[in-house]
Amino acid sequence: MAAEANPLQGFENQITDAQGFLVINSDGAVLASSGDLENDENVAGLITKMLQTAAKMPLEDKTQTETFKRMSLYFEDFTLMAAVANEKIFVVKRPWKQESE
Image (cartoon, rainbow, N blue to C red):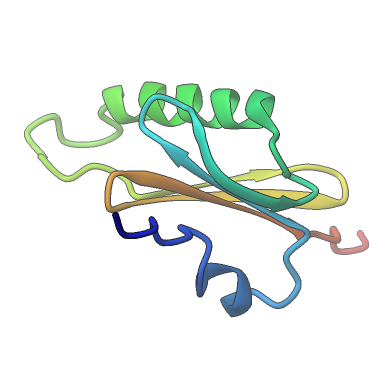
């Protein structure tokens, strides 16, 4: 039996300032994780629910069949960016600094 490939392989190395990663299946289960998001099932569940809810809401023309592919959540000092690809949800936590007003 062949070993299953690590879903984070290659993904981790492409984002140099990342503080954590999650790979989630469509049920909200954590497939892989690292850094600040290591085994964070709470964040995985919340992101999954938010994406499922957003996917049900038509934002423009109701005849469009295209669905969104990305979502970003901004907090005081970090952002969570989620992208959907290959029936998985990829989440990265990155530092975020607000511009001075």
